[in-house]
Image (cartoon, rainbow, N blue to C red; front, side, top):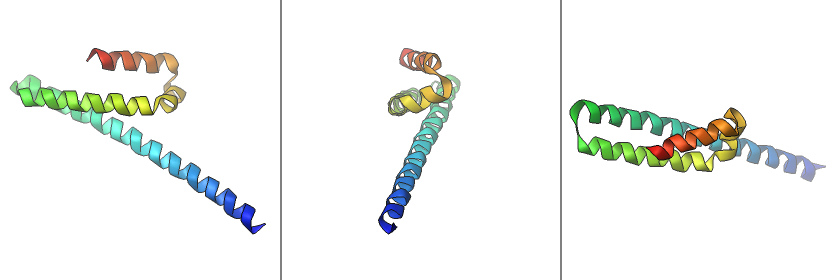
Length: 92
């Protein structure tokens, strides 16, 4: 009985750890979007070429993270919205 209880708790811990990891990825993606927008504005206001480069770096991070989270994002927003999101990102 003790062994089964331990396995159940271990599975719950692994599931909770996975949820935390996914949440961290979502937070990273959100923060990268905010940073890309910040550098984009800086580029438009000051015509700073380095800001444009930083914008591209952050957009690349958003693309990478969103590809890792495909299933989770599709579950939240649906496949058509996710596909449109990916297409819009790749246009940038």
